[in-house]
Length: 434
Image 1 (cartoon, rainbow, N blue to C red):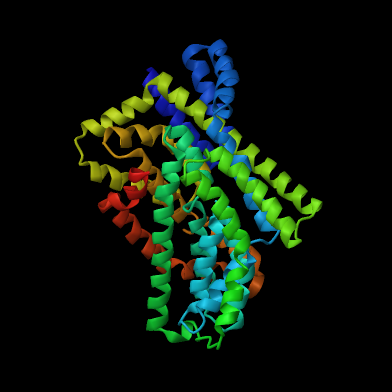
Image 2 (cartoon, rainbow, N blue to C red):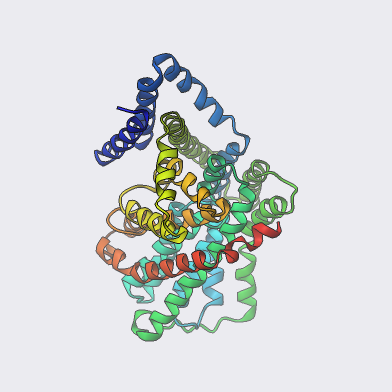
């Protein structure tokens, strides 16, 4: 069998292992190590296994991952974000579907200090869903809104997925963040429009909450958002102002989250230990998968399979947008069965050369890819955000009700993907002027 054939066989074996539910990090490392061994012998394979993990972990930008994770976990466990939903609820009072819209605003704000879809869904699920159910909102609308809004968590910076993409694709993380900010805000706007349209068509879905809230109470509610605003100002003001690197911005954010928690009186050493332990576990898992993806890239490069796939696809002569359509369909299908990080790191060594050869911006594609991954978070049968919401709300709703509730939001997501493809300048405006 030729070297290219070995590479293609390795890709097939990898997907077979994933179908057998082998952990993705283990599958990536074992297939890549075995492939390099077969091609060049055990000495080169062991040398690669010793060198590549060091090269991957030594990337300075990657050190921003644990500090951003720590910032998010401290904010979550210290309950620094609870004022976001309350403020949005008060200001949206009287608007049809106001509580659901408030959940979208709350998720967008929470995203700015976590970078995680699951964390957004869990936090807003505990706060917003019971409030909507108490006001007799339709269960599908209430849970579907929060599950979908949680996907904003990986678009609005600091996005862990975008940091890892930037490291592997070797593009500027700050520019990815700026593009993700635009995509995240457009996603929030799209979800709000979905809520307004649905409630307009069927007012019974969201009985209007008429509260005569004085301006003084609204201003008090805004003041409750100061913890998140202070952290955002410190992190993003320094990052986008050119004062900090991503790693320094993450460190500032982690420090500020602890300071703000102390100021609010919600900081405890038990809470901090929990946040630190979760940071350690999550970072370790990310490193293993990232190392596996780096080994896969080396295996495909040595076998020539990656270049062969790119050459075949380009030589077919397909329109670049037809290639992009094929990539879109692939990610939408894979998103039904694979978790986002694994799907991204598994496919990047194959897809990136094709996208680059087709002339697309890797910054723009990074934002688009993150959007694909987040759509996978709410599509059946896996839909991790859906199961997070189910775990939070318990027997209040069924899993099938939540999946039905997100369908309208999936339509909005697909429309936004179309807009991002047809008008890439919208996403690239801020990265281009930075």
